[in-house]
Amino acid sequence: MTNKEPRAVMARAFRETTLSLIGLYQIYEVDAELADATADALGRLFRRHLCETAAAADGDRRSPLHALVDEMDRVLGRTM
Image (cartoon, rainbow, N blue to C red; front, side, top):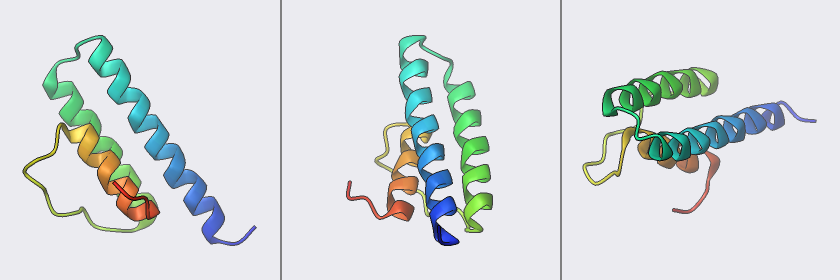
């Protein structure tokens, strides 16, 4: 296992966690403030894990959690 493999595994785990929360928050109609705070906290942890700064904000995103998944996809090299 190379040094980059554990990093990629953790990045995928962050992504899957975020996708799961999107589904749960939609099902239970969670307050937008909680979703925003969750996206902020997960984003800070994710970027700290990758030692990167926050991505520039896009105006057309669906929610902060979706925005975080988009950022994770870019870092992981996935197409959107």
